Amino acid sequence: MGKCCCLVFIAIVALVVGGVSIGVPLALNAVKEKVNDLLGDGAVNNACQATSYPATCNQTLAGGNYTADTGGVTRHSLRMAESGVNATLESVLHLNSTNPNVTAAADVCVEALSLCKDELEAASATLLSSDLAARRQALDDLKAWVSAALELHTTCIDAVLEVSPSDRVHLQQVSTHTDQLLSNALAFINALAAYGDDLLAWRPTGFSLPDGMDLSHLPKIPGLRNRRLLSHPTTPDDRHSLPDWVSETDSPPRWMDSQTQRRLLTMPPTSYDVVVAKDGSGNYTTIQDAVDAHSENFVRLTIYIKAGVYNEQVIVPKTAKFLTFIGDGDRTVITGSRNVALMAGMTTYRSATLIVSGRGFIGRSFKVENTAGALGHQAVAFRGTADKIAMYQVTFDGYQDTLYAHSYRQYYRECTISGTVDFIFGNAAASFQSCKIIAKQTTLLGQRNTYSAQGRTDAHQSTGLSFQNCLFDATPEVKSNTTFYKTYLGRPWKAYSVCVIMKSELMDHIDSTGWLPWNTTDFGLHTSFFGEYHNYGPGSSYNSSRVPWSHQISSGSTADEYQAINFIRARKWVTGYDIPLTESL
Image (tube, rainbow, N blue to C red; front, side, top):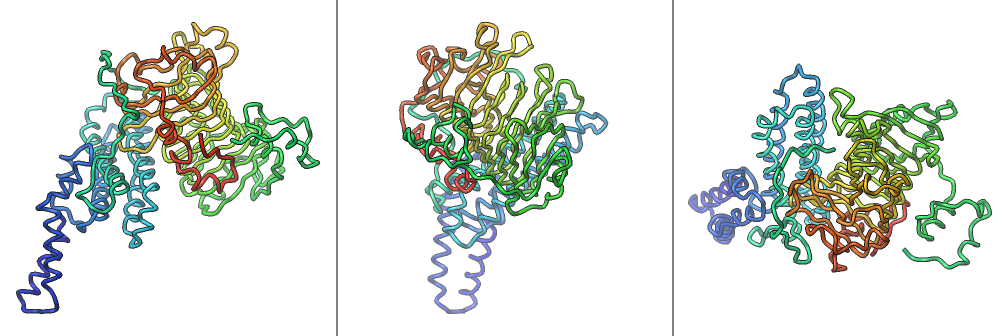
């Protein structure tokens, strides 16, 4: 029970004992009732049963200094989670500082855990709002922020283990407890959203497999090892209503639906705030210089990047909010070759050619690539670590780990994404609509292509990968030799992986089993969700051959949960970006 509630109770008793009579008996009874609710009826204990770690929860709340309501209890859990994050950071900073690899990982931790604390503090501040209706409306944001905080903490630990596995035992003693504190705080937010302001009404809200899916009967696969990351149709006459400046030969990519094609062709020229041009004809010659000049940005600012090859790592910091990059299609190329295998001290998190940490980022019509090749192993082209990122007609090209949808909420529309192993991965809540996804040939013997590797680590997170109206294709080399270039829809990177593919075209190079275990183990198979809904094409006709731990979704309502409108609440923010959005299945 919170000290605040005790103090109020004592104060009122003192008033009565002192003979002050101002209708106190009614107030006294109300406070007694509240105390009995919290202690006698075990409301706090009941609330802790809504978490995955009730023992840690009860220990955390015992004797805590917090107000006796759901907001106070949840804020206290957020404060305790932040103290755990501080403990993890302190533990990391005591690692061997003479090892350059560990130093690089510690640098990742400083950044990731700083962002983690920011999100916990933002969530706590939001819960302080006296406007109950505003607080309720913000709960979707809180879920996203604290889900991201959990992932940012995981990112720190993964970075250390990626470069220095020997530090596993030392770190896990601290980080496991912090993970539990973060998980419990998120569980409280989920319970508050689901059951309201009565602690006695709270129930567990963690992820459960839909449609009555039961995987408990699956056999165990031995040998768990370290998990290193590797629309509405238009009429035929609509075309004749295009403006004069549109040529009949200006054809958008054929995989776009007709409504989107027309929208693209009729889009008027855009005005820009800043121009980047390698030839000196703009305001800046490098993209990073343009970003740095507006690194403390809080209003929408559009940067036009003229055609050219920009060989630079571009980092959009957290303070640079609401930036828009617009290029000249695939003639605007942001390129790099950072990779884990061939560069000492490099981590997956740091390897990206384009890194976005600024909220509300929009990318349109350019290409970003990582040219390290298969030998570079983890080599990211794009990493998104910001809320409400939207990418429209952007090309992402790489090999392993091309697109790192790291955390928060992200939306990809009519993008082209190519790679080999786990080339769409991360722990964001990310929706992909009308995208073209291409498996490439690898030069490494025995390496298998996997389109996705989702990284949900906790049952309470609101994260996953959702694909709708996409094309899952491959290069001619892969299609011509499917025996050598095995290709799968995805595999479980973390314990609660979620990946759903809906109304998409699957080509015949995709292995009939559909999905791949993680390194021949049963890791995540009993707790993850791999779903397919009304897909078509030759690669979708093997339903009877699919692995037993995947799921052919039969319920439209289940599939609808993963549609962008519901999954990332896209209508609330994507529609304001002037980017097409399919709002139903």
